[in-house]
Amino acid sequence: DPMFRLLICDDHPPIRTVLRLLAKEAAGLCDVTETGTTQQLLAALQGRTHFDLLTLDLQLPGGSGLDVLQQVRQMRPDLRVMVLSADDSPDSMQRAMALGANTYLSKSVSERELFEALRAAVRAAPHHDSPPMPEHAPNLRRATDVEPAALTQLALSARQRDVLLCLLRAMSAKQIARELGISSGTVKTHTVAVFRALNVSSRAQAVVEAGRRGIAIGH
Image (tube, rainbow, N blue to C red; front, side, top):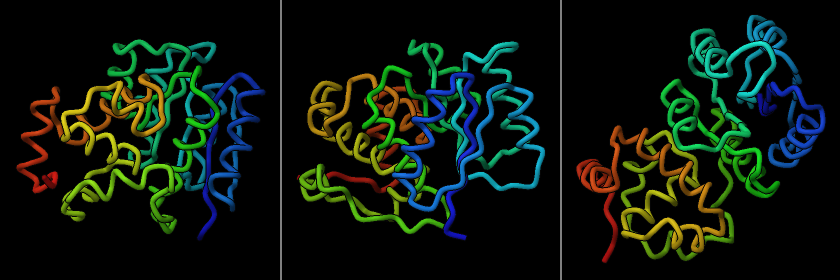
């Protein structure tokens, strides 16, 4: 089934509209279910529909978003969850990632960054054929000599893999942001996801672990 199924949970209709439009642009064939409360979200998850992605607002009325995230994980362990939050503190981000969020985005990100995140989720969906590497980062792949299997075995989006390759080249967050054309905040988000995938907590550990897994950078 080539249809990408998105479940949105946000109590702000304008944000739901933006997400719906961007998802249709990112996925082509896209079925969108919109919910505005925790109750509606849990009801949708109790149904039979298979969803490829949930976008979850952590600031929902009547309950903690982190509690909701835990419930979602118990009900649908395999569902990709993209958290959208007005709180972009590293502490909140780490708590959400620890509870099983796949991606954490601040609501202050640009539409382009939101589109990129949705496109990464579409590419990660099991029935979706991954399109070729986007034109805006061609040099990164050519400049690196990576064992593809070792890299693709990590549960990372294409952009998160790019960030990992930059980390292995000892680039700073500012340099990575410039190289990939994304904000420093987004680099931080992707770095947290990379650390989680490698089960490490620092850049140094990430480099060691990547080497152990056969992910190497060409000299």
